[in-house]
Image (tube, rainbow, N blue to C red; front, side):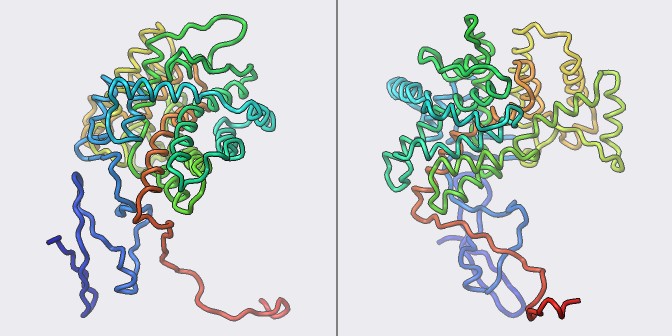
Length: 429
């Protein structure tokens, strides 16, 4: 017999089932709340609302735990690679060696984009933000790949999923090349996912480009760490768009548009802007004091997290990766990175930060790493989108295949005008 939750309003009482997950808090099933009581719940930001039943990702913010299909993120980032993580998120289990080889092959041979898509880029201004280009190009994929937009066909869902996963790095690299005025670089089948992406971004026809394995591993880890993060804003957007029956390319484009927001995917860019504002390491104490002052509007970006009230488990891995990249590139005289490293040291030892649990988060370290790799800040969120695509696809696929899923339709607490009569314009005051 399931547990019950009792709601009492005045003299009336109702009971609702309490559902238990395998991990995490119990959930009160209020699906019949309006039908039974004539009332809605009020939950701005849906922070206390579970809109779906999912088996993909679990977060325990208090304990600092992130699991993909039950596997700790630390183990996946240390021992696996990104395409293995993709397979896990899409299919629910880690692949065997044979399954991994087959999956890698299928992804690799989908990395080319339709040649006419290249002309699509020329419709954008050169100074267009790469995320604006990403939204437009990914949204247009349904016009180029209309043989995989029937979401009721499992085969077409699979093909669309592979196409999105495989082509997103190519589309992102093309957005970068167009932004900086360099020729597009085609994917190379001999390279792995991360190495291919680096080559498409940084190679030029005039000379050979050899991928640094340390940098490729860093990008691969960044992709793993950003692959999925439960029902965040962009993932919820993908699910909401998908609930209407929209094609997968449109749904992912909607996710990219949501991710572009500075409160979501733009956090690592904001962290770098903050470091630039601080300028030099000797000014850090001044900004630390400002951050502690409740009356000062300045806030330290890249510290703390809305979900994690402990050290973000992804940040620990990203911290190690950041130092590996800086070591491989021999960077020791960049003022911005000097500020970042000193700020990191203070944040990990200062009692104020420890008490408030304001640990450096993944955005703090990923911004530093991406800058060291040579990416401009305008590309930071684009890389986030490349990584998160597989999470969006997995969540979309799970949603489409869930027989209990209905079109999303949040309700509201209306506080506008009550019923009133229309007045002709000459009688209005």
